[in-house]
Image 1 (cartoon, one colour):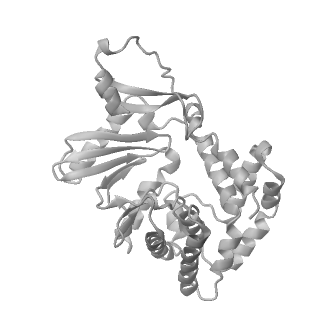
Image 2 (cartoon, one colour):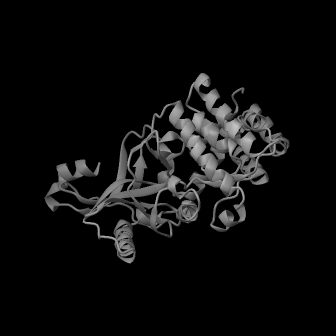
Image 3 (tube, helix red, strand yellow):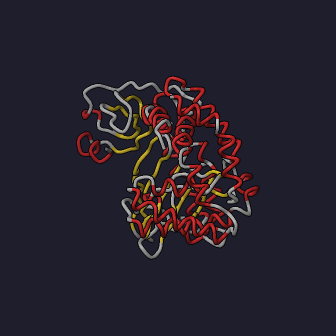
Length: 358
């Protein structure tokens, strides 16, 4: 989009935020974005007059001057780390959940990421994991402050579309992280990681159903009514709560078949590890997903003798869609109304999925 605006209008600057959309994502129809930068006055037929009123839920990078301030922070952070200054900054994307730039330096590219306040624990989690025994499995953090992160470039590819073998390797990588994290939940909670263990998860699910009665079918209501008892059965299966990545699809890992790094920890919470294997396998046919779940079960059974991870997975499988609805409802509550089209259909979609027979 920025490249096209540059070619057509001579625009040089940054996209700030969505102003309007004719329909919700993923097919947004006609959209209008607010951008800030330099453009020859002759390039525009009329001067735009966007609403620049502040909003309490707006991310700092979506405000006029916000990207420039973020880039100034990155320059200072590089200098403080004794790293070469960047020579160019290329905005890769921006929306209500993150803004990302590629920074070109004489030593190679770096990545600058900024997230809204409800994901601000991501930098602290990366720093925490980067100081532990599994540092090689998370992005190297150069600097982090108030939702801003400066990250080293990682070799390899984003693993979208990865097959079962690579997905199993990702699951094994996360298993190692989660075994260690399970013994340090108080430290993670002190870093701001949201607590979504049993009772907290049950409250969130009940709240989203109560807030959207028009989308809550009888099956969803029955699931919520029995959720406390179901989660008690899950706890009796004996697996520990731990650090849950929260969005463990293959595209959130980068590398190759032999070495991977797990990206994008903004969705991480304290909770049950089964949610991650269910996310990692949700788009696979049952015949491909089953061996991955079975391998996950074997790892946890070996790590926690006497536990019943297979039953825990099956008990939580119907809860995944309900949990997803609660997550998206949380996003909608934390972003300004102009950006609701990104997630407007997600809550009813996942509540409808939660109503489907298992």
